[in-house]
Length: 301
Image (cartoon, rainbow, N blue to C red; front, side, top):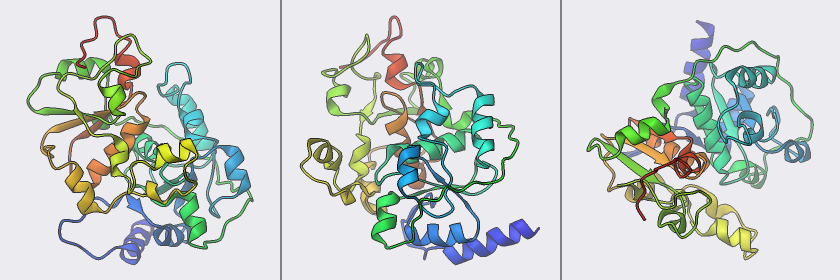
């Protein structure tokens, strides 16, 4: 009962004013929310590399190295065995049964991947710091380079099949009128000009909506890569009304399956669509990395 009371009080303290047409789930939060939640003892997971965490992080945040290294098999690009994930999360005191806030660098696709992965592993209350660690520092919040440890726990995780689909399930859904596929890759990947697999192109009937269209400035990732800018604020997510406009042609009542090359970028769109009220959103985690290497894979270009 004490735990429920604490969560109720925290929810009241952090709740934003209701706005017509606003998000239906508040999974994307700001530094003010994180400050209060961290003070109240909510788990904060820094999903960056250990070397970045050691240089500075949000006080109280835990780290188990980069989330991809911690949860994904490098060769298969799929989740590690469940017992290994239980050991890694449990050893750091990251308990999916409790509220968790995740953050990485600003605009990090891996922060959203961590949210989706936790929800796949059974979590019910996960949020992403929209501004990332850069936004935390720019807000003049306190930082530290002292490692934080939480008490280890024993975990027995039960994956949630409602947020993921396999290649076999994708193939079975192709052409179904009640299913919509959203390809969040670059246009060059979508049309087959760029490919790292045996088969190039996209799933038949898929709609192209690159994940970075959700950013204030979708071109920021490319600008950073080319060295044209060092400014990352363009990688913050757009306002809800602008996000809704991007996905206006999708049907929120349909089963919505999002994919990319390895399932990481797709997690951004998964989070945004769920925030906008899409009730049945799933990530095709194997994505084109597996589909494009399937013998006889059917693709459009």
